[in-house]
Length: 455
Image: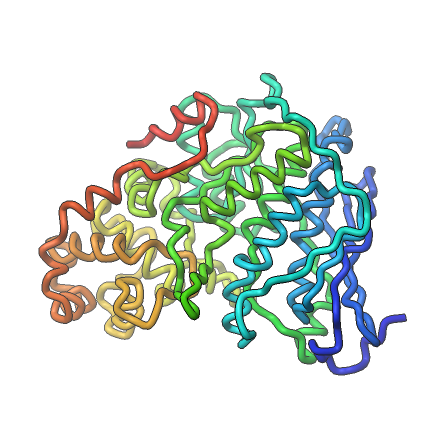
């Protein structure tokens, strides 16, 4: 029996194993079992409870193909407790592209974790597969009766609203989805009036015990995890592609570490999307089952699209700090880097009255936030460890504020323009480039039409 009574010493583990998958079809529950191996091994089990169709006709055969990849990626929450040099796949059915994705998810997706945990560098892990790999056949196209029925993960902010409304505009049959939905996600889903399903993710309490007694802890590639839960959920319900709302801006590194980029948003980047789509294709045998609708667009372009919507202003919240305050009604904290960036991104496209109605406070009038805005502009040591846009986007948005009757006299705007007077002049070439299409994977015609909606 693994010993849980001792203090957790990360150096006491030489490998990590993904050891088993248990499935209870009647309840929709899947349990993934893991082990940190060493003289005193530690076992962990994570549970996902999927939504089942009302008619009871769940397509477990299709969903099961995704589970080995899903389990391997979910395992990073437990692997990072010790970050040993070897990761063993001891379950059947993972295809080689899934192994490749896992390798990059550890190396790049745990990059922030490695840096902030004080590790020597990005993790280069020996991944061993002790069970048969899945055979990879020539993929087929998604069946026509499912291709126009996307499952769309919601985050509670502007991006997924733009995706949902763009797809609604062209007649796609959207089902919204969240993992462990909070009140904001539920509010946004309700505001759309479209179907909404959810899954539950239950982390092993033993992980929190380990964290409290010395385990390594930090950021994991959550977007990749949610993406794969969504793919399995879509398969269970007989739906079509999982359509994400990840933007091109997510590719910009948060910082450089000894000449290597470290990106808080790696699993939202185009590189991660291409790798994960390839891994999903190999697992499911279907092409085109995972992509981001908003990939060609910057955050500013998405903010402009959101400004064309109606009915969501009092529903969305783009603030992670709000959800960490126990017992509080989730809302905009008005202080964190994410709140600051979204306020900045909205400001060129909305009146002061509308923006204040969304966020509730005037962040441009809070002198305590000047240094935070400086970081967004690239005037600090590095970008914040948050899901924020490019430094160029922040600079362009601030240049608009500096020329706006609504904002030019605000304390933050005046201070930043005093630091860098050229900001007030703007740069037409840089701004133009931010509103041009950027590289993206090809999508079916109706989804490409949706990309052009709300312009």
